[in-house]
Image (cartoon, rainbow, N blue to C red; front, side, top):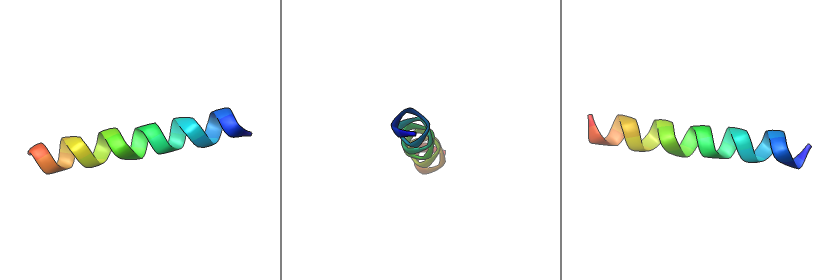
Length: 22
């Protein structure tokens, strides 16, 4: 499922940014 994979990638990137800016 490309859509699910893309959702996981976007979530991981957003989580990484949020963790890095904390």
